[in-house]
Length: 175
Image (cartoon, rainbow, N blue to C red; front, side):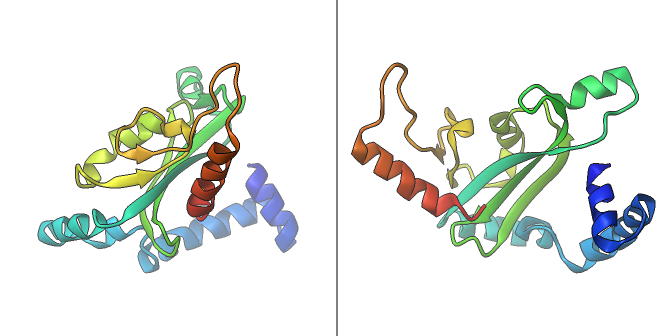
């Protein structure tokens, strides 16, 4: 993979050594560093308490794609082909606190063909039904996600709308 080629060049080792080293350390780091607040809470009663505490805050949600190798199987490769980036990709969604200090939830390694809003809706049950989120225009249409103002077709945003969008973006830049 391109990532391991670059990592190998930076560390002055071969691509396979970079890959082996990464795969050796990944499980150890996953044990030591839980990826999200929701994964840290194992008990059902604690999980409900965390959900309740999170509803008091607005969370930031964002998704991104990472390029991966093309799968050999034809059916499998179609599942991971993203027309948006014209490549085979893996989709990751992150949800963080507004301050940007804590990762609340991570969903990683899903097929790149899945839209951001679909990915969010599939994992929505992890949060309280009244939880508020901030997202970008990829989440337009989801009731509980606050999005920036979309530019109308054949028109432009007013200066005040542009300023609102800038303020909105400055709050969700952490993710």
